[in-house]
Image (tube, rainbow, N blue to C red; front, side, top):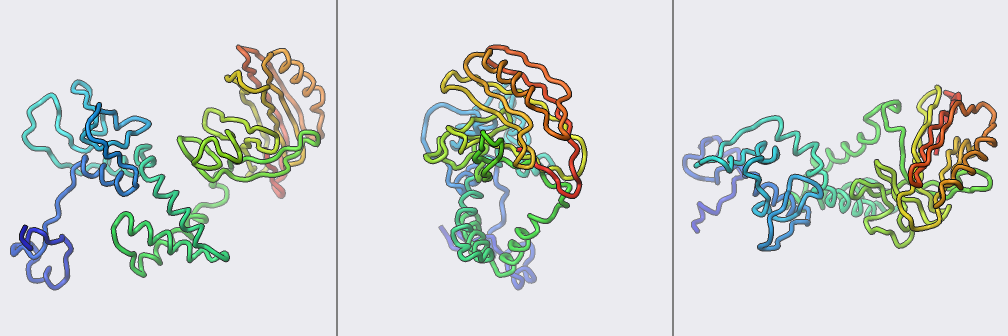
Length: 348
């Protein structure tokens, strides 16, 4: 190949002034990447591209979001997925000699907000976080930010960041923790810890460091060698093996008010000997606790016993109902408690 053909598309001010239209071919003209190349490049950069040759086609637009090359994407001729239409893939049901090129908001929204993109970039974020944490020795966060930023630039852009880019990244990370007012920040936190059942207190709490497969976990290895199956997700989660490894959802009251708590405690699995659930306020006061064993009658007796004991000061159990559909207990608990605006409480 000639030297002209092998040129990069990078520009410089002097050449742009002489030949802004590149009529003399002093650089390569930039070309728009098609969807197939763009998706494969993202997977390659993230280190998750599956280079397997041959085999069945796979639906790349739906979870769990296949990592195979886009050429192996499953195409439904009668119902082309929206993802392909958004990025100008030609209709498989018509003669399309040339693919159109559009620039529409939907393309940016897919790249910014879609579950597919989050799945693609998550390995990059996790590795950058690990590198930054390792390099931030002695509490020097700036050293960790610089190491993580350099790794990301090398991995994605194949170059080192400039001094200005490092400065901008440091400013971005610094503002990320304080960009929202305290009242708008999430009042929920998810973790695991130790519960003192006898005293009805939370003895220890640690945040889950990882989100993997739409669930909070203690590590990317599942089950974790140290903490086991403990996890939390939108549908529930999995309890730990003991009270020292309990799955905890913590809510921190942003202001004074009335709290209304209700939920459903289920145990779909037949393994194990049962689960325990507690509501603790201020890490010291247990205002409710339930045990769900194999037999629904055990759960009913335990629930009735705890309701009789729930006469804490400033706490009123307004209404309750217990239903037993196939070893599942539906708990409708309405606990009203006045919270102090000066010393906001926590429900764990």
